[in-house]
Image (cartoon, rainbow, N blue to C red):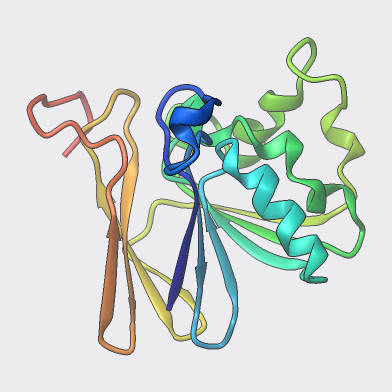
Length: 182
C-alpha cells in the first residue's frame, strides 16, 4: 500500500511561502494497492494536481471514495482533468448523506453559476455506487467505513491490505456529538 497526500487543508486552499512544506490544497489522498490500483480519497483542491500527475503517467482508471459532501472535500472535482477524457473510467463510492445521490453531489459543483463548464461536458465513463455499507473491496484491499461526528454526517475509513492498516478520520469532532454522527 502506497499513500500520497495531495491535499490536507481544511475549509479553503491556501498559498504562500509558509505553506510550501505542507502544501495548501484541501483534502485529497492517493492510495495504491499492491496491484497498483488507484484509489482517490476525496476531491478537494488537491485532486487537480493528482489528475495532472496521473495523466502524465497515462493512467485512466480510478476509484474515488468520498468521505462527505462539504465543499472543501469536493471543490476540486471540476478541475480533475481525467473526467474530460473518454479514456477515463471512474467509479465513485460513498454515502450521499444530505444529498439524494453521489452524482447529484458532484454535479452541483459544476452547476451554474458555480463553474463555467457544465457537468454534461464530462467525457469519462463514470459509475456511482451510492451506498453506506459495511465494507468495500478494491482488489486485495478492504475498506471499512467508520462513522464520524461531523455536521451533515461523514465517514472515515480504514484501509487494510496484507496485514497493514491505514485509518483516515478527517473532520471528526471528538468533543461534540452531531446529529447522526458517531
